[in-house]
Image (cartoon, rainbow, N blue to C red; front, top):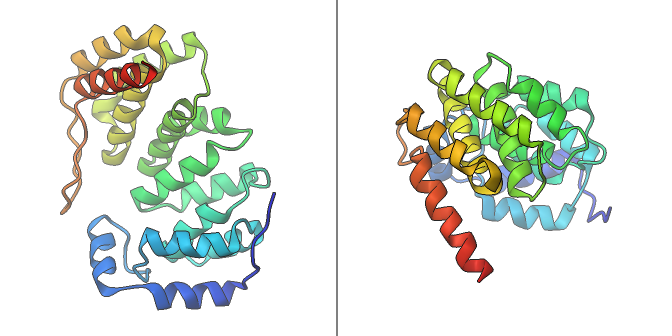
Length: 232
């Protein structure tokens, strides 16, 4: 793993504070980030990431800060090969903000224990733990990895059974997982579409934002059409 320029924890925190803006703070708060943040754009986080590249120990320290920007950055510089199951469980239990759930899912999807954690977290009653579990599943499929046909069918049945009674952000992640199965598992596409039709509209409270939860059938149809066009 190629390592970049080393920075200390305090140097990174100072840099994040310097890069923060009041406007970004307002935006992130609307999305549920809470009060402990600097408001750093993803463009600036990526610039900083290029300097550091991978620093797993620094990532662990940044997550412990509880600062939303630092935790976001932690998911960007953590090493999937060094990320322990215990750390994944610790991180996911501390999440209070859906974007961090999505980012952590992207990191976990790169680990050797991705499938196992996804299956475990999908059973959780916690909003963001369950959401993260389903987003890990979506990430696995998007990356071109496969899951067993029988597992995919079982997941669709679970989504149909539990989505209406699941917590807010978990419903969004479950809908996204259904969509991912429909797009990336052709053998289950018809079943995914039929499942989505039976579920109907999935209602998610996105707060004071313009975000929306996609209508699954239409999204699957458009995505599949794009993939077919791209394939020629």
